[in-house]
Length: 333
Ligand SMILES: Nc1ncnc2c1ncn2[C@@H]1O[C@H](COP(=O)(O)OP(=O)(O)OP(=O)(O)O)[C@@H](O)[C@H]1O
Ligand code: SF4
Ligand SMILES: [Mg+2]
Picture 1 (tube, rainbow, N blue to C red):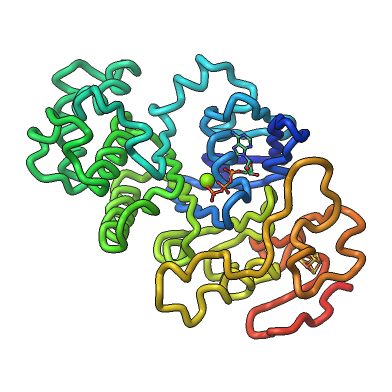
Picture 2 (picture 1 turned 60 degrees about the horizontal axis):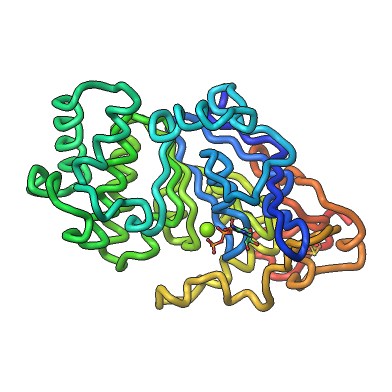
């Protein structure tokens, strides 16, 4: 089956005063139609840069230096700005963590909702209005006509994020990329927004890529998951494969960081001792080795390829771990 989105060997470099920062390295990621794919990993692992590369909104100093991003067989890495802007908001749309950074405070919700629909030639003003009202209602906003004429500051954070979801859906995209869509919201609103997004995904046959720090979110909504660490995918597979039978010590660490934790704030990934290494300059060997309880000298010698643990489940480690075994078994060494 041809993937809706297929990323192969993606590398994104960012020019910084200290040298080249390798934000994404040799990333492979496939998303099928109707799939929800979560990307998880702690801060600075390259999740947002990956998403921005997909939608052609990389920061000025960032460049795709290798690889391809095929969206329905079309390589986005080779499209010019006009080609990308034709896709953006139309075939694929993005929802960011903080809606206020995307909403223009000086324009009404209605103007912003309908702008892309009209620009992409999806219909006239009446059709745009009708679709906007229908979508505002679908994302759970009551008094939709009143909201349509209001400015963003009149809405709560939760309502603004619902508006962003409606906006993302205006042109009937095939793919929505949501970067930490609920992190800024309180837990109850978070759950409601995720439920809305999942329902709409099924109803409209969308594919979703959801970036999150929160493994609870992954468990609730994902079909497949990619775990990223320091710019690389370190494990990918179905949710039950990756969390039921993890192959990478980082995935094991992530799981341990939430086990027994009742407090949401402590379900953050930072409980794994140590920090993500600086991505500036050449990094060789396993990028997790300074934090890995199972590191051996060989882990520093050369870059490590993904290995197959089972069908459709791959991991990037010289050694071999599996669930229920707290200690390494030696694996392939
Ligand atoms: N505009 C930029 N200029 C320089 N470096 C950047 C820029 N944006 C991101 N980076 C760097 O690229 C790397 C990947 O960042 P990215 O924002 O993708 O991380 P992330 O996984 O999304 O983290 P978070 O969970 O905090 O959002 C980090 O080292 C980050 O410092
Ligand atoms: S390659 Fe070595 S350092 Fe890296 S995760 Fe595996 S055991 Fe740990
Ligand atoms: Mg981010």
